[in-house]
Length: 423
Image (cartoon, rainbow, N blue to C red; front, side, top):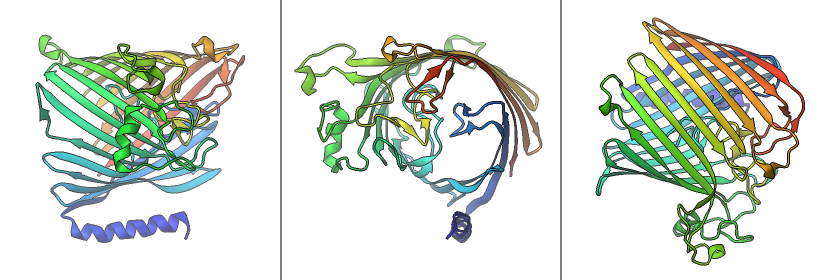
């Protein structure tokens, strides 16, 4: 059976299922995104897996849902690549969500972000939808403040040069001692895959504690990350502002702890090594939103002696920070709403690699500006887009975990147009 026939069969099945649910929209939105790129291999960050080829790139999306009017829903999205050389229809998203007053659980092919920024070091919106499960408590646990816990597991189902079909497990806790302060703790491990050990349920705590991370040939040797983030919401102290958020994220890919074999009981605050950091401010005032953010990604991130090639990626896209490892990136953006329209611009600078350990003769320096205009006409959104990159030197390796910088300068232009209908 062809992929198109499989999708049509799935749509017919969904149509039958809707008869059992009180609310449904077989299609609730239809979206066409078109881009013209002056160069090959141009990443559109945080676009759920869009990497442009030179020339025209056209995609269409149709999404819908069915639910029982209470707490259970099935959500789906079709994606069609309309480029002349590649015509492909796929079931881009399909997931089930159940919500009670106490907890929420989602399972299926989808995306999500974990962390205080959409450009999160741990899990951004950069990668294409993949199979995952996500569970968190909606009703906060009260203990000297409020606690929220989240467990996420990703299945990276793909053939790879390092280890095919690995998984990523993420455990997160958010603690709010007072309304203006949120402290997040995150632990991540890329583990398993073809030829790697499987784990029983009671073995996962040992994996997450990282006691045998980086111990060669250990069953519990995985690519581990851990750290914290702090978010201050200070708008209550500024009457003229709707939101004032200041955040800082600090994540390490190694830790010093007494339960690790290599550390022999040593303690060292803040317990994490080989650290990546991110800091930002978001201000919302009436119809204006301002963002400024700085990110430093460590040389040792997103790669491991087991997961040594594709590493912390899926289908060539970084799961974490969109541009990968060993970089500094800073940007400023401003969005202004007026009537049924909005305009946004973003200006940034990135340098990669920045570590002497990279032993690279050249570094890529990327100066970029992008802008988009959004106009709403009844149930239709029209969004033209422009991005210009000035690249001093060029990375000829498309993987975000590796780089091969050559002395070739270029200016890349991307023109885009999105037309989206909401039903």
